[in-house]
Amino acid sequence: MGYAELIRQAWRTGRFTASPAPSGKRLAAGDAEGRGAIRGEMEEIVRRESADALGCLGPRGEGTMKLAPFVKFREEKFGAVLFETRSEKVFTLNPTAAAVVREILAGASEEDLGERLKDRYSDPSGKLAEEAETLVRQLRDKGLLAD
Amino acid sequence: MFRQFPKVPNQAQTATRVEESLERVRAGMEARASRISGRVGTALAEYVSRPGKMLRARFAVQLGVALGVDPARAETVGRAMELAHNASLLHDDCVDEAALRRGQPTPNSVYGSTVALLLGDIAFTQALEEVLDLHPKAVERLTAAAREMAIGELQEEFLRGSVDVTLGSYMGVASRKTGALFEWGALTLSDLSPLEHSAADPAKLGSALGILLQMVDDIHDYTLEDSVSGKERAKDAKAGRVTLPGVFALADASSRARFLELWGSMASDPHAASEMARFLDESGALERAREKCREVVAAILTLARRLPVPGEVAEFAEFVSVMAAREF
Image (cartoon, rainbow over all chains, first blue to last red):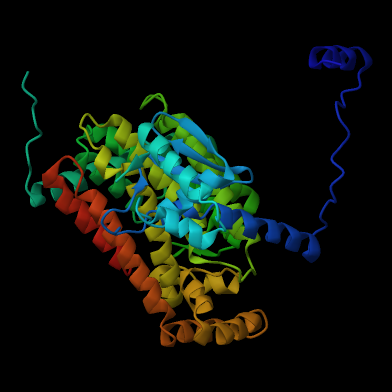
């Protein structure tokens, strides 16, 4: 049933429940266990959202790459997004691309990027380093990276 | 054919103009309070527009001149920042059940949380009204900034009691809670600037300044007496919040165990908070937090030196340094 039909039916019958109420457990006041579960999730979220804020710390070494002015980075469950705040363009990144940008924010230079990724992730075929090189080129082409 | 560069003022001229601008920001806020007082009464309206240190307005005015923005429009940005900040303080004091703010009783302690929350809502609508005609993106971005501030607050609320806090996660929360409003101000001034200024990255500069303010506040929480800060000492630790000095104490193997011991006794021992303050000082955690502040100041000044009106940069740099070193 489409949304329009659902609305018409609800109007005719007077039943306005479009979907069952969420079945999640409702927290009682002082429910430490439930609060603890949210806290665990929150710890994970703030870890994921930490890279961009650390990027404001300088000074950076010579030859290091950095995101272009007005570009923000935020990790998401699917990988990450780059957000150009002036044009409001959003670029989605897969987990590999997110790992590369994380290294850039941590102060990688174009020369040591491959090595840094190799240290952090298993990359026997060298494919990750290859993909990282391509991504850096693409980021430059789109004006998302500055040296 | 000829590009006209702005005249380079000397620092004394800049300082005078900034103070005059701040007077106008303040007068505009009082005018707003006066208009609202007809609806809610003078005593309540005063909370909406009550000026504090006016750091946000000063930031907007000084960054505005360094970006070549028309002073009246920079003042509007400053006024909106102050009003949005007041809104967040009114709500924060309900969250924290704070009795004092800027040395005065909070409205939640005098009239209850319901009243304080509603005053906060009014303050935020006043901030939105300020910028309705300022720039097409200003309102949309201010609502996004308010969302980020609220998300930062929620994250902080649910991290209460957690000792799984790293420097990155601490700074990330600060960038939302405090940085988002500064970032909004800087981005709006960037939109209003007639001069090329990409290299100064005002949005990042604003965000970093907001984070710095939070870092300094968190250090003051352990170092300033109640009478100086207008807040209770070690309030964050008592509320179960690990802040910057705590992050460094936790990250250091030699101080972690003692920190956790004091942390565990915070709820039951009335002396634990002052003992914690002494321990953070003696273990070097407070000094490491100050060192991190100095790093952020250096990063901000690097960006500030790229602002397009050279004569105004010195005054802005001084503001940043004073803000980092402030003890008021």
